[in-house]
Image (cartoon, rainbow, N blue to C red; front, side):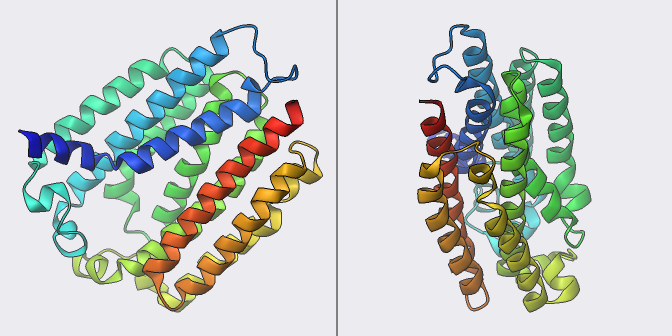
Length: 288
């Protein structure tokens, strides 16, 4: 029983799920919760909606990760034999039922939010479920879907509090470009198992080096665009203090990926976390 419970938790990839919840909070924070009065919110409804949105995001991403493992159980025997289903900690049926339960809870929380947030959430839910079966094996398409989903957490958070989505939209674009790059590098890392499974990912379709060039180009565009929130006055100078080191880490990760895709995508993740911190700090300094 304990092994099964641990396996179910592992299926959700809790680190990724919580990180997605943090992105939703950041979207809510920069779009509305920070406000224009020193960050003080008189009406607590936006805060409650933000909390519901964050929890819904964590549950939905956890459910998406679980159902991804359900569909990927055969390929994981090659790429990730230590995952819960291949090692026998969780049955495929158990993983599917667990995923459906998480999705149900996420939908229930989402119905408490404004219509735009509900629309984003429902669209994302369909994309999450369809990703593995329909999009993952299409060259570049699966990467784009994951990139959209990652970036849309900012939009979802902003919509949840009824805030200005222009700022959240910029963060969406930056996050989507970075996520796309990391997903392509991950496909290079997983090329052996993906080829065995018959998937036609971007590295399989056009080659590893060309795929890494595409990833580096997307990441380069994100790095070049990263000063925009400061230039437009949305974020203060403190944003640059953090985002420039984040840019340097991600640029180094792109370079490292050409020799070691595993190390490159791991380093890229750290750069993305640093960039997330810069969003919060940059917005906080502006409103104080």
